[in-house]
Amino acid sequence: MGTTGQGQAGQDVDEVDVPPVRRRSAVRVLLAALRLTVVSAVTGGALAALVVAVIIKDVPVFLTGGGVLVVLILIGVVAGRRSPAGEEPPAGRVALARIEDLRATSGETADVPVKFRLTVAPDDRPAYRVKIEQHINLVDIPAYRPRGIAVVEYHPDEPWKVLIVTRPTAEWSRRAEEAEIDSAPESTLVVSPDMSEGSWCMLTLFAFLAGAALVVLLFRGELFTSGDGDGAAAKPPSSSSSSTSRTFSTSTTVSGPSTSLLTFGVMRVTAMELEARVDTAYVTEITIEDHRMAVRGDSTRPVSETVHLQSLPYELFPGLVREARTTLGVRDPRSWRIDVTPGSAAGAGPRVRVTVTGKEGTAHLDADATGRVTDRRAVGESG
Image (cartoon, rainbow, N blue to C red; front, side, top):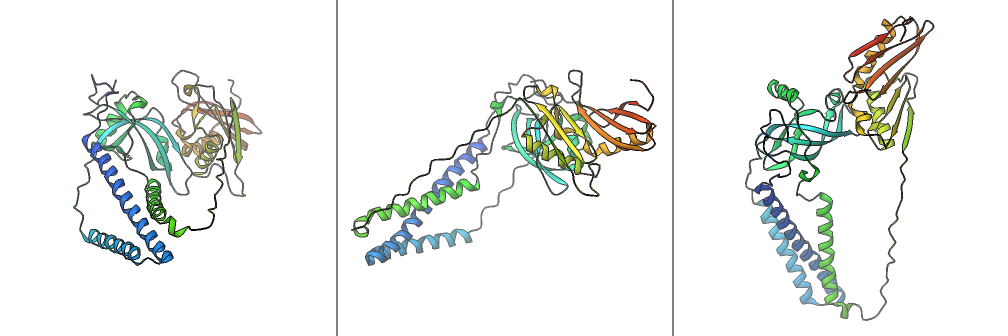
């Protein structure tokens, strides 16, 4: 693992240690699941006993079910009043991380939810992979691009809790600019052992129904002396197939009398919509006009020969258009267009070309992935 400024020499990135706290967290989750299963099953059985007792007119069963429910309620009240032991949240540490990939989703505010895949490289342990989602301001998104270095805060005892530091200190900013971090293998990916809310709900429902069904089965002789059970026909799960083509292209038009892609934020939101439509952030060509944006791609092209939709500085493009319309000899520009294509040299960033057309002719300027002008051709110049 070659990492500048991270103290990783001689360590194997595959040997990612699992902290004891993570194992204890998994044990706590297991115990909580068992406790929830028992409580839910007993509650379901007690409620079913009350219903069965009313139907078969059995007083002892009714008293048993009611007594169990009362005990559960008392236990819940006592547990709720007992003050939980205050636990200090784990202290976070600052480290550098390599951005393996990122994908922004649509948002209606200035802060856009972005999904990151990171290689976190702490100073005192091997690097590891993690997936996170964090809200990033539209203006700050161009600072994060694949293969870039970011400053993050992570918890040593819970390594899956990682947060990108959007305003790092000067020292960490300098380290991020100088660092070179290799990608950790996918086998080092760490995930939270906690169960999702949906899993807890499903476990509660299943245990509740299982407890109720057990009580009903115990008294099935008294309950079902006659009658037929209705069987519910299970519907086979529907399946869908999808096919992918080797090449793809799509476009969208911004409508409205006063709407233009030069309006702040509109260009990036439109790029997000196109990314969702083609289901990939890697394209081979992007065309932007006043009210239209189009993308084209080829699934067989390697990533190095593509452009990442969310890594472009869309917020700087209006300034490039304004500079092209006023400094290249076109007095009355009739139209403009931005073409973004992969760099010609290996490892080079995308090339941004802004073309303006008027009665004097056509002119263009070129810029790099950071919005810096690298070349310009005024009206009448060759090349």
